[in-house]
Image 1 (cartoon, rainbow, N blue to C red):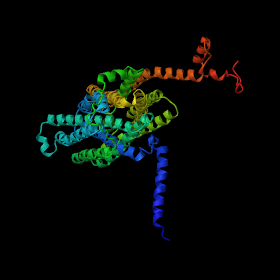
Image 2: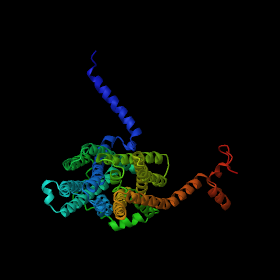
Image 3: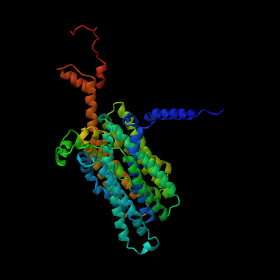
Image 4: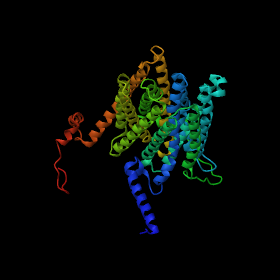
Length: 506
């Protein structure tokens, strides 16, 4: 018996209805979607984060391993190349502020910056294959001086890093423009979920492509990423930003200078402590980026494909950390305790990575990588939400830029420091020893402990304020205030008798 033609459309509508109900439940931050800004539009906009994720996996993961192990470039030099985008990172706050106040003849303020950032990314990816050919000495490239390959690789890293900093900062600001102010943390969280999704997917795809590694396959992979970056960013931006038409002859009011806006931002309570906390935590988590995959290749004898898939494991842990942070904060937990939990999760993670060298257990190594990703996700979302809560709607670009500037600068400095420590200790040890890597992981544990020392006073103070507001004491009794601050559960021991409605207090 044939089904009527409209039956298929009914099943299609039923499936879409089910998917729309499941998405807010299983996709973190999907409940930010509304009728005016549907989830499909937000997911399309998040494609710019997918391209950023592809670039990060390629730079920090695949090229890092290939240049150190296969091309015999010193780890300290590779670390400096990876950290070159740090030269641009402090400008993220300025870029975010400029996108807040930009006046365009087309009525667009975010689009021009994302367009420029995309071109910078494409330019870096266009230079990178030629740099790798020179470094590998492939065919005629063997006659070229090695310094040409190193300089070209450094320029490629700088261009790609600068481009992704611009695209990410302004793209996140555009996402916050589309939703109400109270949903800013949710929409930024959704964008970062898609960043992690892009990292996981690209790490798996790169691992499949490079299963049988050759320089030619790596170059094809880089060229594919260049084309996809332009294509996906174009799809993401299509008709996303509303044009603001300025009446003819209208002169816009002058905006405050960047220095004044920055001074007002950092003058708020706990902002400086928050920025120091972001720097310490990100520095600690970032030190492992340049040594994690070489450590897996040289000490645990993993292949290029296996170490590339480590990025997927790290991103999966970060994704779960973001999801758990969102669920916890939606139930009333503040962002500071969530960030502290992330720092605490990173300590046993790096401990497991250290133990993997002594026991030669790859499962323990992967578990440690997953735990560090989980801690980074909790810490990142907690500090991001805390930063967004300090800025008004007209300055979201500045706040996101400040968070991104400190986070990216600390991550790049951590990468450079990790590579230098590894090479410095290696010069004093056997070349095949695990000691250089273990020195880096041990340093990360110490810095995470220092970050915990910075955040604990804020967590304790806010917990006391929460207990004081939950269990108020009688006015004018200092003894009662002291008793309740020392015993937060004492409010349950003495309850006021419930008086009938309408009877005045005695």
